[in-house]
Image (cartoon, rainbow, N blue to C red):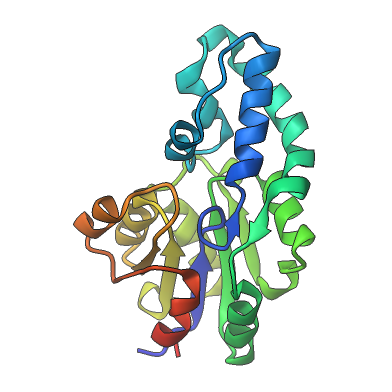
Length: 212
């Protein structure tokens, strides 16, 4: 099969922003008088959008204020603490040179996605960027993937999705797209393998051997 479109998740797939998220999370917790949380607890809660990240750790009545504090801090922490995974620019350039269409499908809010893409100067590689705050539902609902394919006029069988979480694999399956799972993100290897993605890879650079 010759693919025409590659859709990427962002966090844990192309960009490591875990430290930035942790800094903003614990800053907001401290401001509202909550205890700090450890890195692993925060990392395991990532992937469902910032409101869902914070919600399990605080009172419901504090959520709106907590989200506002988190977001204000996060604009700066993303610039300071995030980084691209190795060879990401090489991968994106290689795919564009081959004539592939590229897109982002993220549960992260649009404003922060754009900050990251601009910071690393990779925004120019993407034909379409879509985030869950522009939709009615988040991954694993397939809406985000279906909207991207509709926008770029590409069929599911001509599309491949790359993500790091179980919700990415489920979203891909729900959209009838082959999904590649990358290790090192919020989901464990066993959790990913149980869902039987098209491939499981140790690092994003391995995708160059799969999509030729």
